[in-house]
Length: 268
Image 1: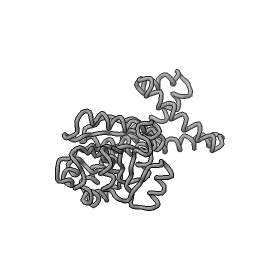
Image 2: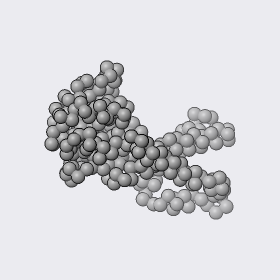
Image 3: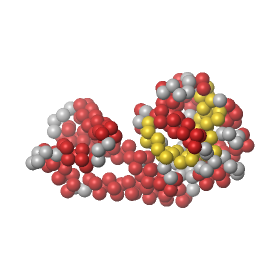
C-alpha cells in the first residue's frame, strides 16, 4: 500500500521530500490528491510522485493518509471522502485547530486518527512535530507514524491539551528566531560588517548554538555561562539584554501566540 497525501501544498511537499530522501518510501509508493493543476504539476516536478485530483483514489490506494489541506477546507473535504475511509486506515491530520474530537464528529464513525503539528523548518528537514494519536490507534501504528515524521525532523508525543502552547513555541517560534537573526545581523551591519556576511554570521551562530543545546544535553544556562568570562565582552552584552527585557519579551510573545491559538480554536 502507498502513503497518501490529501493536499499537496508547501508543507506536504516538504514532508514528501524528507520521506523520499530518507528512503522510507520511494516516489512511486506515494500518491497525492490535489485539485489545482498547478499544484499537481509542481508536486510531480518536486517529488516525482503520482498526483490525482481524486481524493477517493488516494484513500483507496493508501493505508497511512496525511490530511494536508488548509483547516477551512476540512469539513467539505471530509464530507466527500469519509465513506471511503476503511477500518485499517491511519489518518494523520496536520490542520491547525482541527481537534481529534472535531475529526471524529466529521467522520461520524471511529477512525484511527493522529493529530500532528509540524513547523516550517520541515522544508529543510528540521521540523519539530507534536504528535497525538486517538484511542483507536495502536502502539505499533503510532511507532510507524513517528518513524515517518522523523524523516523530516524531530517528532515527539504530546497530549492534545498542550497543542496550543506547541503553537506558541514551535509553531510560531521560527518567526521569533528569524527576527533575532535579523536583529543580530543588523547589529553586525551597524558595526561595519557587510550585509551578506552579517546574515551568514548571525544565522550560523544561531544554528550552531541550537545544535550545542541538542547534542550536549546541557542546560542552556550552563552553556551561556561557558561563554561569559568574568568582566568580559559577553557578560556586558548579556547585562544589556537582561536590562532590555529579552527573556520577558520572548515569554510574553509565546503567551500571546498561545492565547491567540486558543481563541481561534474556540471560534471554529
